[in-house]
Image 1 (spheres, rainbow, N blue to C red):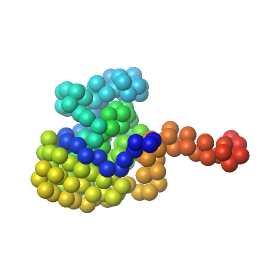
Image 2: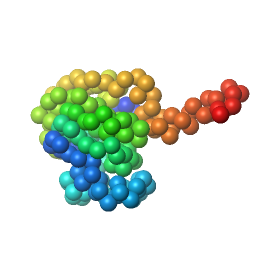
Image 3: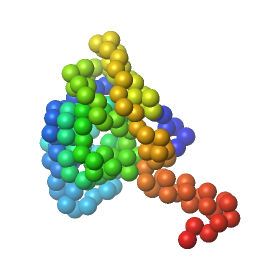
Image 4: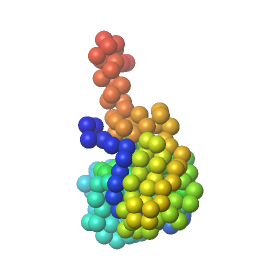
Length: 180
């Protein structure tokens, strides 16, 4: 990914606490049908939480959410968020949701206590996901949050699990080893 950057600059879309994956992030019908095509998922992202979101969102925008974001171990919404070039900063998210977000290659910071109090929808944010630096340019607030562990940074930087496996496969092939 030659255009990958750990630093995102964009508008804040603030959500509350307890936003479920099914019905909050992406409609349940797309989860039960096992849809993974980003072109079909993106227009439905946050459809029930913030109608018209996909038309307003731009690469670099950042979702800021409260506690228990994305409850439910699904990845459809994270595929759409990653395809749009968004980032996610939340106060907490269940382990399986966090794992799904990383597996999709989504830039994410979690355990960011008080982040929802530091911004409003529409504020201009800059987040460095590699260092944990969170800046609200609109309000003049700078915070530090726990950063993504290096092993997970590697997975996100190559586009998630699929990108990591492709990179590993190429390294094995170029070393003359059979990646059986």
